Length: 138
Length: 138
Length: 138
Length: 138
Image 1 (cartoon, each protein chain N blue to C red):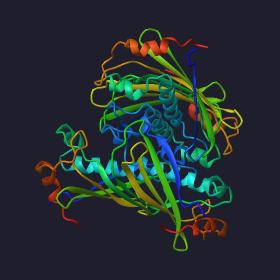
Image 2: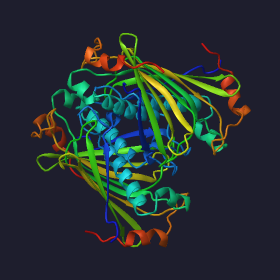
Image 3: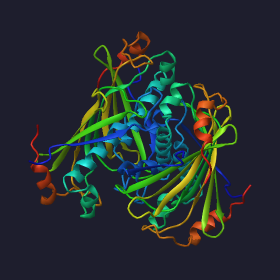
Image 4: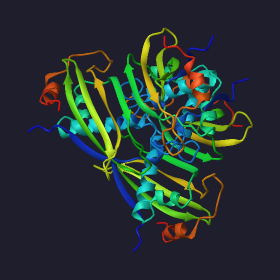
């Protein structure tokens, strides 16, 4: 009954491409961020609201598998899921395919912890974990 | 007698930092690229020369562990190693620490294959593997 | 009867913000590019089609006035216009405001010339100028 | 007797280039920032020190003229000057040429005001203007 995943679409910007004619590798992580933003918003807890409550979600790990090329202006579809990963980590999983024909572009995950504004680790607050714990890894 | 690793230093740019007061996560991959460039140059095979011979080295995988914060203008030291990873993949390992006091910032790796200009996979040419195969994983 | 301007909306990404809590200055130029892409598409000549015909539109000049702050996740509205500027230059004008309340964020312009793939200047082809010359500077 | 300009060199990163085979236009503004950082450091007032004193220098205007191409790994030389522009604005001028042969790449300027952490405009403090007012526009 809970939203298990969020799907968002976007176009590759010229600024995101490189001389190989595809997106530069680090852009995948920037796109994953867009997916996290939309997942959180769709689940009623925009990231701005999280930071407004004094909680930050810096990355402790990221992983990307590059599966196919994507050119400037290609329309891509990004699917994002989120889970608690143990008691302190939050895991977002991302998958990017071509919106037109479904061919895979990239997939990966990011792992986050909760910190205060100074970067000091804190326990994930209940209002955050309750949104995430309802998710079941598929 | 072979160069096993390359060390380069750089400063964090303001454009690379975010509201958390540290570098934005995708910058680590951009910095890793600088390390690959310097490793290849130091081993006599600049990446420009590789592309001039019609060979490209797109990523198939990237992994980053975020170990500590780095603020605008902090001077960071990036250590890069490179190996053949099987017969077709090239693996670059990167480690970033604060140049002043050695505290860890990030570490990770990227895995690459060889392609032609169209992105079609090709066998790694001997002039490339010979530079890499002399490396022994430490 | 011709479309004089294109309006598109987008959200500020976390990767685009900096420790001042607003977008980093160079992002305005990346956003202006999105506006150019949408203007061209709306006028029946996507930039991919222009490059497919062997014509490139590199910038010769850019100008930005920063008028207000925009935070992560703020929804911005970008208005783009385009004109021929003399016989060889193309001028795109951009204006960014907050979508919610219309407060100004940035405005500016970019000036472009036509080149071939090697970057050699060429005369703007008729199929391109005919799209642009119908525009009247407001 | 005062340092009138700062010169710094850097290499174009792959992440900064685009399918046209030159740097993406917004990178010029990121490079200009590096020049400002080095100018301020060379004049005894690193930007980190300015922010530590509660003063920020956001841009109110930027202008770039794109004069030539620069490819991945090209070594560029950036010359930066700084002046007070009236009583409240600070103007940095930047010029980028190829380090090897001096061919021009880009030139432009950024204009800044002083604000507090909230982005509220403040009068430029004397310890800042004294560094800048000694400069004579050449």
